[in-house]
Length: 424
Image (cartoon, rainbow, N blue to C red; front, side, top):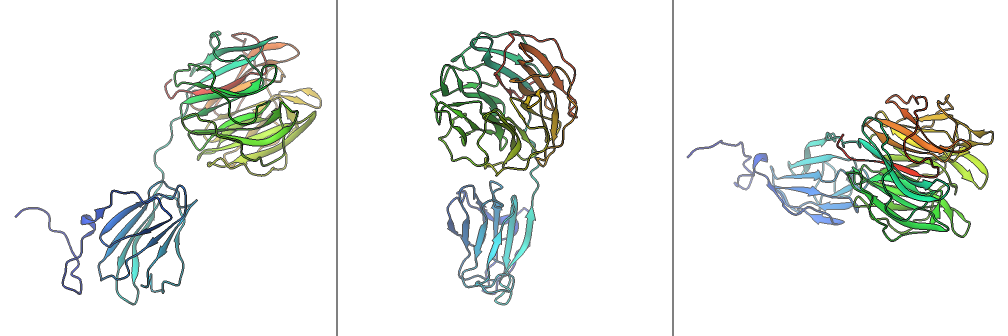
């Protein structure tokens, strides 16, 4: 006989308990709202959709062991509840509530005796070590040159904008765009001679697809941002009926737009939207209600929940743009204030707090767009400074907006932009 001899506990019944190294891991992942577990097993518990009550065995012997692991890192959103099924848990009767409510937690419990019952041998929280890759390139597309267009311009990982690419999809303006699926983009909604709800997906090599039939209320002058690492949402805007709305439409990580969800926050149009933070949050900031400029903001959680209004900071304005930069940081800049076109910028920290006004750079303009590039930088481009332009202003990884760079591509305004591609 050869091999490693494990330490095994001899139970009071005379049988030998399974060692930690000999745990049987159950293949089926627990996803339901209830589950009954057995000694000697390890379980993955996925609470993405619901809280789960875990019922322990009704009888146990010293040395019985059970391991539970947060499979999807969602116990902080949907907890697990331990039902000790008549036995004590850490010396307390099963009338006590036992809950585990932390993302990434694992629980390794061993039965001691009738007095203390089940005792945690380990109760650990593991860090989420993998870091999602960031997009390296961007795409500016659609807009208004004097007529609606569907042309696009690629932004490379060094911040250089390419010449026009022949358009695909319905020419339109006042649409919005966001990353989705990690390395792809989606352009949606907008205005032709009427409000639209169609969308166009962009592949991870920057190819714009033909129209996808619209979902949700047709509207224009809305905002869009990615959230939760690989999903996106469109929110707010101005409908064909002339209503300013705050409803939202979530976008899956495969680019499918969901039906309308009742809005939260002040209904408005022409705001800036961008991701921020390290765990997939987003922010919609500034905008207009009719002709009244706003400086309020709404934070978006990493599950796509829109928060109520945050009191405004900075010069109220609309028709601006927003972009992420650095690590978890973002900024909004340019736009139309009560005083006219501005270059004002407002930095957004990794907690979603909008800072007071900072001096802008470049030509004051409105109806421009912005995209991330190079992993940690951004670019504002195009817009209207009394006439339509293709001017570009790069943003470095500490949020400094550079002077004007002579534009490339068709001059236009009311376009949209988004990042794509993990490859430089």
